Length: 315
View 1: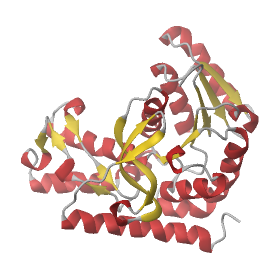
View 2: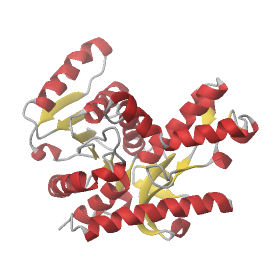
View 3: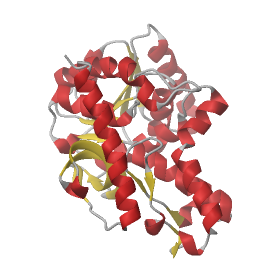
């Protein structure tokens, strides 16, 4: 990217404000805009973070706004707006509430930031990415759902807790939907370069995989609302890879056109992410068991996207 880098974050709740703070602290962008429809909320949070800058030493300009006009000239737009999960709710339960919000938000992105890359964080992630594509009509490489980064981080975290090894030396990968049908791939996960199934006993690894699948629900039960620090950090990791052309290999939700046997759905797969957004979809070999789980996950994504169309939520 040339010139001043600008990230706009729609939604000034826990995820949005955390993403703004992490972006400022890491120096990812020179201008960070926090947008919310609640009067004074984004302005107050932005001012608080600006007053933190002299203490922590970052130089980003953080601006709060209630107007979508502030999206103008955004390089990246991160969408966190929507209702969070509550105890007892699945991500799919949010479908009727959050798809209409995405319809409105995506329309504003299309009008005010037509050249931006969009990173979707709000749930249900798979359907929200689908809705954003339908409304904006943006090229496939410019719409990304972040959840694979989060789910893989949770897998890594739990492996680190079990093995007492630094997370820096653990690589873990999850594919598929963002939900209980996700597919943590032990065959592509390692501890210090050693395959994870050679380091962790099978019963404990099975328990870690299951905990990864329901990791979001565990946070909801503890906090009474959705996680925010890790989702925020994941979205900024993706934004940084685009803005600085890092060419990271990350698991992200992108629109597939036959890769992995899936068409016209946003499903989590490993991609190369750089200045052009989705620069390559990487197809990996899976054994029969993982293939079946991945297909089940993709089938679930299709179900909720079909529900969006059947319910007429984008009309």
